[in-house]
Length: 306
Image (cartoon, rainbow, N blue to C red; front, side, top):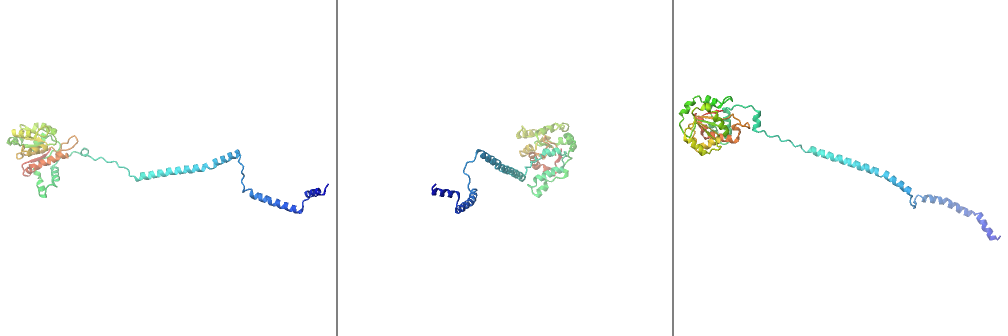
């Protein structure tokens, strides 16, 4: 066996001290380096399908839950805020008050007890109407004394019984009246139908006296002027508007007039009196101012409220 081969075998069997030291140093340093580098290096190998399923399940379970809770809470808070805003707006807006229906004359009169008219009522009506149109002196002239009035109806009389009471000597007065285009007794009411009704009630009072209806319905002023001029008329029953028109046209003269009776207490279907209807009231006051009030102050005319 050659010497070189033996020497090679001896080296393999017995390493030298230098080789041992190098080996020891390598074994000591290598694990430390490997351990320190392992966490930094991430494996490049693809994960197995089972690992992927596990990761997917974890992501499904962990991540969506808090997101749903937040959205639910947000939606609830937004609903509450919207409700509070609506309530605040509702509180701020004032509630619409129901408009109360205005009471009409009919409503007022239906709840009130009927009271008979009095001279004071007529006086106050006249002064209230003319207070802004006349001077103080002229208003004093419009005031009537108590002697200008006869007894008022106390709601117990019919027209005939009332006229007999205020004019007990009617037969004598009737005979003394001989002038045309005039009347001795003038009865004023609010409507044509009421005129016809009152004329029917005069049957037991008038005797032989001539009665003429003086209203505007279906009858022209000129026709009534002719009727008044044709003969002596003792009693005239009419509406204030037509009576004023006849006086203006001189178809009806006032000097022979002795009694003026106002249909004061009668009420229509709406429970209105003659003075409760604005048009009729205006015509009545105009009629009184055309010479009747003057005749009352002079003592020639007596006024009665029926």
